[in-house]
Length: 615
Image 1 (cartoon, rainbow, N blue to C red):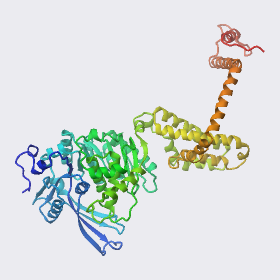
Image 2 (cartoon, rainbow, N blue to C red; image 1 turned 60 degrees about the horizontal axis):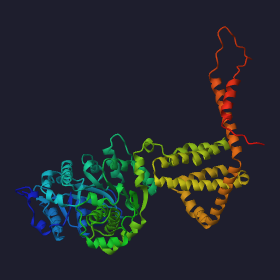
Image 3 (cartoon, rainbow, N blue to C red; image 1 turned 135 degrees about the vertical axis):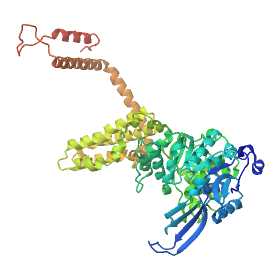
């Protein structure tokens, strides 16, 4: 028998708690409440034998952890879940009550088996193996049970659903939220369950996958494309994003407004096509009632630092890593609590990362309490360290035919082609100056010209700035090369070094052009700017005078050039289309065709527009 058996639809009746809390919006969290059993060995465990250590019980479950974190940051959650009337279920329920949180949405019954997850850690605190028994959650957290709490969803600023829900319950929750105009946050939980996004993608506003879950979600949403697992080991943030960009694009094209991509120790990527200040329009029911959190964060994280696109937030340096299991859940909980409390999106992500850091440094999945001063200090560090890796305007390129054609100059330079083919050609004994100069011209001029063209056509300010920096660096190098040519041309490895330098200027991983400009060229130009402006002014003035004084000669040279071009055109046309001889007449090889009249006419036409200066 269920503990809750309402006789009429829940949305027609208000509970006592709701009457007392009239006007206070609660974040609705729908998903699993799980008893976690943590096995922590004191020495590296060996197979087929036991290892000494400690076994602890902890309140867990992705949705439950997020809800607890949200509550401890000052925003009350409304939990919708299912528990059994057994020892594990009673332990979780009592812990929930002790936190002063509503149990109205938690279904309990003798026939329900409380979800349990057993996790074995290694000596570093990382999960080494885990077994989950959560089938009852899919069986008993049904669409019918969830639909009873329509009133709660209608008043909530946000609804968070985790992928532990059955596909039917997941779809019912999202449809119900859409009906009452509440944005949905989808938490993927695992690679296998993240694929459940397919049936509900059109309802989702926020999602928070890691790299592997992102790839699985993109493959599920776009069967025509296959995204392979990425190379994580030695990747920089820029190269990591380049690998993940196609998968991120799939999610954003499906209508998901915000992708918060967790990268573990490398931080978080916040991805959105929209401006980051759009929360008031998509979360109109959020209220600024979390004054403590607002005051602490607004003081150190000024609003509106970046407009949109993809922003990388660094991770916070840790005092000590104790347990990693609750970090991802607390990150989401920190963001949800901040969004509900009135902070903007960038501030919310910074708070989420600071909250995750606090979770890593304790034994429990969620700390007993959060120190708001420490949260604000860590959030400030993260917020000020954030950098744009892909501007909002650059999302246009993902829909632009040129950008989507698959041609990417930097992907060519960063692929295996130079290492496996190009370098063999350049370094082979038969390599000549022709090969080297062709390579330098291709890398130093042709590819940058095309990339500059793409930056102009797509109106991409970030790429435009990048290639302006490149041309400034390349132009400076060309000037130096012109004056030093007689000396350096004798150096046997010069062309190889030039090729490597041109590649270094362009590669995203090195940002050589920007480094050269900021470290050397810019300081030099600023230091001598007044003198250079004077010199440039004199040169422009003298050049103008010279052109004006010799305007007739320039026009004469132009006329001569036009005559040469026209004569060349006639010659080409006559060569490609020979005149057939008249009937009955045989044309000898030495016979010439008189075309002087035509040529004279052409020259006369040109002369009508040319003034030859008197000598």
